[in-house]
Image 1 (tube, rainbow, N blue to C red):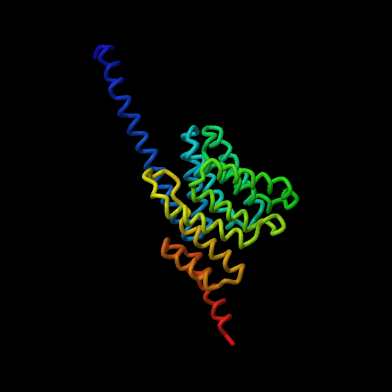
Image 2: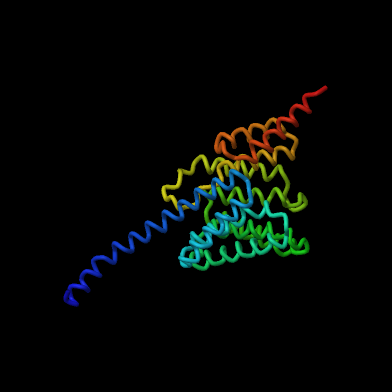
Length: 260
């Protein structure tokens, strides 16, 4: 074949190959997203760590993707509460924060990545309680900035609610103000259409309900808590945490309250 014909063939094939690769990458990301949802529902650290490794591999293969860096951070945030060993948990938190920074370096307007950074900063306080005076304000500032960047984003409002729930009452935190944020997140989820992109963030609907239930439990409004936990199960029947622990705890508390 003549060189000119070879060059022409390459030019014709290049867009097709690029499109095929993009489709394969999107399919792998969508599969990892589904696996993450299933692992979260099961509530087991082993499964979450495997999914996190999947996202890490995808991100390493495509380091210019802010979305893949974000998904590594989300998987890190998901698994951290299930890792009791601080020596194992702290590197996960650091890596999650590094991926947030990488996502923001690529896309400074990626509000959810900034909110996830704030969430991971808040979780990192457990590794060094003395860091509360620095990480606490940084976490809150990043969550607030993310909210200002994307007022209609339900996941950002949900993450702000978790931060508020764990913040001392003297600084405006506690279950009552957190519950209001979780309610706002629920309203934003109700107004938010399902993500058309199978790789885009889609999590949080049952999270906003179950965390509202947790906040209601802390205020001893057990009937409201049971309602939130029931709604969370309707949103995600596979959620083992709600089905096996949270809802039974609310029902037990209600039964105890009803006793003379």
